[in-house]
Amino acid sequence: MMIERLKPTWRQRLSCATCAIALVWSLTLYKSQITANPLSAAQKHWGAIATSNPELLATGYSDNAVLKRFHGVSDVDEIYQGRSIYSAWREFFSQYQIKDFQVVEQEQRDQGVEAQIKITAKSHQGRVVILSMFYQVYFDQTGKIIHEVWRTNPETTG
Image (cartoon, rainbow, N blue to C red):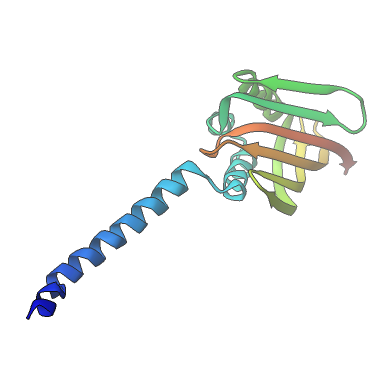
């Protein structure tokens, strides 16, 4: 008789199962909010670049983010930090009208992503330019960019 009292009822089992499912779901949701997937964040960022949207791009950076651009033809390096990143993208979009944006290769590494990117654009001078780039980005736990590097090697066509 005592053993039967120790056995949980159907209602108690259902209650425990519901609590366990709710706990697993909330922990999964918490983890996804704390640790963003770097590859997904990078792909979202690339989508904003492909649409030439500097406002959307600016929301993807942390307050102290650093953007570095290295040009293969010249030794001019550009470094932007914080709010100046928005201006850098506005300037880029004023110089280039993106026609095609392709991620040739991509690889996630911890909180970062490395990729080979090819952008076909019309320059403000009217020429079609193909920008072949090495890309590297690192994200914080929330999915905001903290460090981004673009190494370009432009080739002019047509």
